[in-house]
Image (tube, rainbow, N blue to C red):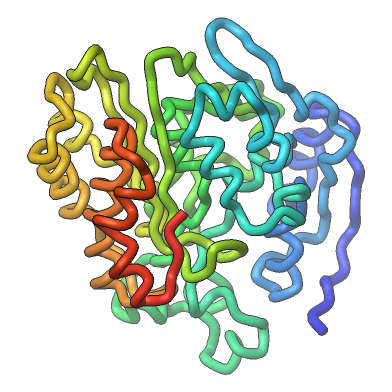
Length: 348
């Protein structure tokens, strides 16, 4: 049985108290939202805070309101709440589909939106118990000096497998960060770095308090997730797509790839290509090629990396055809299901 290391628990009552504690305790402190990521990491000794600051009683973090044309969601809203929100289901399909596919119902009842956005990066060498990692002399991300995925590399290649981040980036979301020095707002894409160790631009003494999603009027969005099992598993590839069309012509588009790098990958060339064009089969195929080129999966997660790269093109085609209005079941049967079934994995 893996046990938690010793730590001091502080139940905060306000955002001001949280940021004060983060400032005073420094690197020894971490915040606890749902605990679905932090506690397993602590048991594996991947993260070993001396002070854990509980957010459960911070009522400011449970916001759900419309403000200035944006939907504002508090970072402590759990994923079950987000996925069951009728307005989210109607206006922000990508967020709904991403949230409802995280892990299992029990974990969605505990895991929070803010926690999923800040999810630790993952790797086959990093996500093992302490004794296993010690036997290989640890890795660069924790206690070691070598990235076992690419031993000659000077950086960590652990992968970002958050589901909600690609969806919210595609929806144009922002986040609010609060510290002792005040508050600042970032476009969600700016929250991430392509570095498996330092994957967030959020400072240690900052707290992610709110997610702000612009009006989805005129937009359609979706989220496709590839994993070995139909529930519980982290994604090995995800595609979030959002489109705004006037009649048959694309006015704006965003496609974001997940689980391929240490941060979500927004394919901006694809967005530029689709603007002013129809969603013809030829244009969709060319757009998928633009997404395929920068997709560089690493051999540190489930399935063969060459096959995962191949599926990027298929998933982008499927997501765009869904947004065009094609029946989803037909898309899956024609473009993915046969091959996916042969590899015993799951698209959802």
